[in-house]
Structures are given as C-alpha cells and as structure tokens.
Image 1 (cartoon, rainbow, N blue to C red):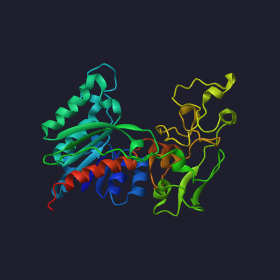
Image 2 (cartoon, rainbow, N blue to C red):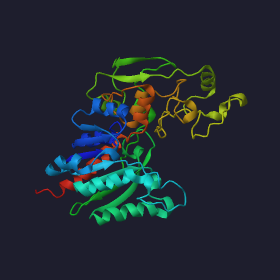
Image 3 (cartoon, rainbow, N blue to C red):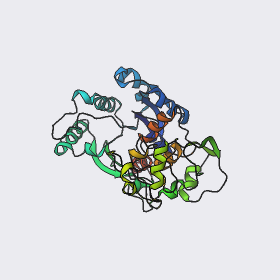
Image 4 (cartoon, rainbow, N blue to C red):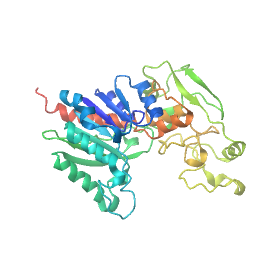
Amino acid sequence: MRCVDLFSGVGGMSLGFEQAGMEVIIAIEKDPAIASGYIENLRKTRVVVDKVENIDIESMFHPYKQHGIDVVFGGPPCQGFSQKGKRLHIYDDRNYLFRYFVSVVRYLRPSFFVIENVPNILTTANRYFYQEIYDEFSKLGYIVQARTLNASEYGVPQHRRRAFIVGSLPPFNFEFPVPSQAVVTVNDAISDLPPLKAGEGEEFYPYTSPARTKYQAEMRAGAKGFFNHQATRHSKIALERLAMIPHNGGGKESLTKEHLTKSIYSGTWTRLTEDEPARTITTRFDTPSSGQFTLPRQDRCLTVREAARLQSFPDSFVFTGTKSNQMLQVGNAVPPLLAKSIATAISVSADRLLPA
C-alpha cells in the first residue's frame, strides 16, 4: 500500500508503516534539522522540507494521485481546541495545519486516513471539536472511528496515550488493533546497554554481549551496534540530589529540604522502575526535574539511545544533529511499534476485500 506522511517529524509513523509492509512515497516536514534525521534513516521516501502553507496541493500531489495513494497519515498540530470550555472550530485560524490535512485527503481520496494527536482532541468542549472532524470527513464519504491507545499495550515499553482518528472509504471496514498480551518493561528494553556515569559515552558502541530479552533482540535486528548513547553531564548539585534518591522507583520525597525544587512536572526527581514500562518520554528526558527520566540504578538521566529504545526505535535508526535536536526527534515521535499496529490493522482491512 502506498502512503503519504504529513507533518512527519523524524519518521516514527513512517517507520511503523514500513515495518508493516507499506511504502511511504512522500513525507513533509518543515524543520530542516528534524527532516535530516528522516532522510538519513528512511531513504526510500521523498522528503519535502517546507512549511505546508507554502505547498500547493495540486502541483505537489498530482503525480502521486495518478498512481493512487492508499493511506494519508500524520499528526497535524491542532491548537485551537486546547482552551477549556471554548467551542473552537476546525476552521479556527490556529488550525490551518488541520485544514491542510483535510484538503490533502479531499484531493487524493485515499482508502484510509489516520490522524494521530493528543487524547483531549476527542473530549474537549464536550467532544465538539472531534464532532467537527467527524462531520468534515463524513461529508467526504469516510467511515470515521476514534480511540485513545496506550503504547504500552502494543509492545512499547512506555505508557504513552495518543488519540487515533481513522477514516476508511466503503467497502473497507477498519477495526482497531487488539492490545498485546505481553508488557515490555524498562529492563526488558535497555538492560543490555552499557552503564554510564553522567557525562560519559562514545559515538558508537558495537554489541559485545547477547541480547537479554526478545525486545532487545528485535531492537538490534540488522544492526552491528548503536549510536546516540552519551549521557548528559549533570551539575554537581543535580548529582548530589540523584545520590539521595533510592534505586528503582525512588522519588523526590527522599530529598532533604534544601534540595527540594519547585518543578511542577509529574515524576520530577523520580527514578524509572525496572519492572514496569516508562512514563511518557518527552523532549526533555535528559533533565531530572522534567519528569521520571532518571535511570533505576544509575545517577543520570536517559541517553538518546535509551529513550529511543523506550519509544521502540530500532538501534539501526540513527538520530542526527545536536543533542537538543535529537531529543526533539525522539520525544515528539509516534512510537514505531504503535504505528505498526495501526498499519497492520489497515492491511487486514484491505486484505479482507482481496479475491481468494
């Protein structure tokens, strides 16, 4: 199946759809530094680096429309629905990126579309915004379904809740994927990576020991080692605080009064728990005060590679650019294994209509 990725980021959704056997023909990403990561890793896809408001839909997509596009997917930033209690519209000026997504679907007429977004897109203002989305695509002939999925229920070692709105043109009948029975933990994901002290790390590590879990073996597939495993150099006072926090799930309640901070983030100064999935990985996972990003038994925060493992990016996927840019690439991505589950469900829907 042939796909288009709008608002692609580094390519988490594209990678998941490729892993499900689909072909991503073209992707659009406005940030050149983030697009460089996509280009480096997903080399079969044409990447357009530009803001969508600069792109003429007909001239850009006409060549692809001629040969047919099966799926359009992406996560258009929708900011106009975020103000509590206000009935803000799809056509609010702040939602021009969403309007672009609708326009591309209208022009290409794919058999399926997938919108990925924050969960409250489905509930804000008594579901008013989602109802507008539903109505807009229903007018185009799509059967629209929506559900909030937790990545930890689909083989990803991370509790990450995201809303998916899926549309299908009759006679296709999409069904959301069934959650996996197996839970992947922090230890399952990263226990094979070499321990580091704050500030340590090399550009590349070859594998020197076997994978310890099935998940690690899957993440290692096709690679001889891994990049992006370099620990942040924490300050002296941060290291003093980290040393006070008990291993494997300990939190800020163990800090002495003079070391308590005013951070408002959930999980601040708290260690990850080895035998559970991680909390949501954000773009500040190298900072103890920004969330539950401290290693279970090491006095430091996650490296880019460890965060990538928790997002289900394989070790063959190399993150490029500055450290801060790499964290943006990882933290803002859709977990590939979660995207793969959606893509596989689409494939199953399409296969039901194939002749025996």
